[in-house]
Structure formats: structure tokens, C-alpha cells
Length: 84
Image (cartoon, rainbow, N blue to C red):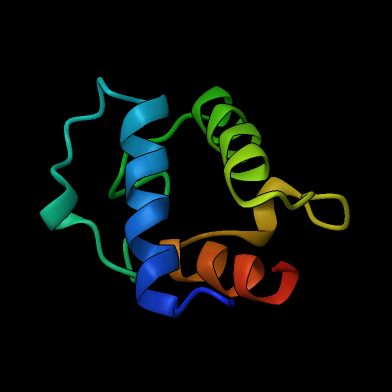
């Protein structure tokens, strides 16, 4: 059964907070329009950790994209939706 967009969003928030617990952003402040770097505060290393966790959690591979392809949480959700 495919996950809904809202389910992907919830799980993505969980993954981000699990991998990067020191981020100073509450889950309630994260929206699909949140910028990964400016709003959430992910560094390039943080993005790498999150990508690895997403791959493991959702069972997908980020093999045809680069970090610059994702600016917002919504961009990541779009990609996950296509891959699952």
C-alpha cells in the first residue's frame, strides 16, 4: 500500500529529528515549504545523514539526483513519492 503525502511528511519529520536531534526546529515548525538549509538548519553533512536515513527508512535510492536538487521539504517528498 502506497503512503499518502501526509504520511511521507510525518515520517520524513521523524527521520530528520531522529538523525539530527540537535536541530533547533520543532516538528510543528516544519512545513513542505521549509528550506532544508535556511529554515531547518541542515548542513551539507546533515543533509548527507538525512539522505542515508531516508534511503534506509523508505527503501529507496537517491541515485539520480544531487543535493542541489532539493531546496525544500516538499521537494524531498516529491522525490520520495516518485520512488516508492
